[in-house]
Image 1: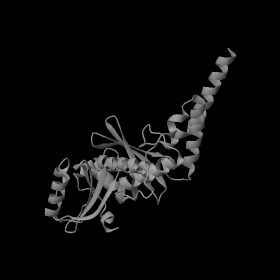
Image 2: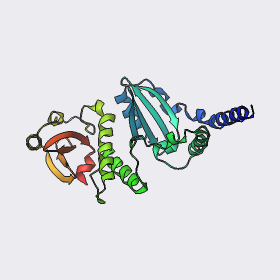
Image 3: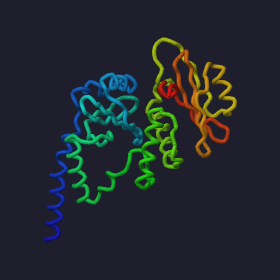
Image 4: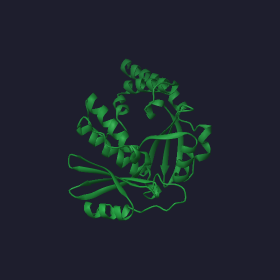
Amino acid sequence: MKLAGRMFGLLATAAMVAAPVAAVAKTPPSVRDLVGARGSSGQDQLEYRGFHLISGHADHDSKINYWWNGNTKECIKVVTYDGNFQSIDQTTNADCNQKGGSGDKTAAIAVGAAALLGIAALASKSHHRGDTDYDERGMSEFERGHRDGLYGQAYHNYNRSDSYSSGYDSGVRERSNQTSYRGGYNYGGGYSGYAEFNDLQGQDRKYAVSQLQSRGFVMRDNKIAGDTRYMTFWREASRQCIVTNSSGGTIYSIESVSPRTCRD
C-alpha cells in the first residue's frame, strides 16, 4: 500500500512538473494564419517573415520541420500532412539548436519529469541521426556534415571523418525531402527559364556530365569521399547551382542548392 502511494505521488509530481510544457505547444499569433496553408506557399511565407528552416524529419505520413526566427527568438514546429500545414506550434529553443530562453527552462523541467517516469532517453535522440551512436567528436562531425548538406554548403570533410560523410548524406536527403514540392528548382527565382536536370538521376555519370554541359552548366567542383563523388555545377543564365552525388559511375542524387555554394 505504501509502495502504491509512493508511485501515485511520483506520477502526480511528474504530471505537475510537466504541465508547463503544454503552454509551450501553442500557435504563435505571427504564424496563426498559416495553419492549413499549402506547404509551398506556407514555407515561402515563413521565410518572408524571418524564419529559417533548421531541421526536419518524416513521421509516418507527415513531415515535421523546425523553424527558427532570429529576430523574435521563436522556434516553431510545423507538421505538414497531405501537402498542407496541419499544425504550427511554438516549441523550445533547443529544438532549433539554440541556447537560452524560457522555453529551454521548461524543456529542462520536462526532461526531469520524463526521467522520473523512465523515458528521458527518448528526448536525447537527434531528429536525423537515427539509432546510430557517436562519441562526442563523432556527433560533432556528423552534425557539421548534416548542416553543410542540408543548407547546400560545399563538402568540407577536412578531418576525413566517416561521421561527417554520413551527416552530409543525411543533410542532402533531408533537403531533398523538405523541398520536393519545388520540382527540383529549389533556389531559382525571377522570370528567366531554368534548365531541367531531374531526368539525369540514375544515369551514367559521364552521360549526365555531358548533358549538363550541353544545357549550359559549368563544373565548379569535383571531390571524392570514400566511394562517393560530389560534383558542383553552375548555370549563370538561370543562376542555378546543383550538386550531383554518384557512386559506381552512376548518379544517385542530383539536387538544386543555394547559388552561393557555386560562388564560394
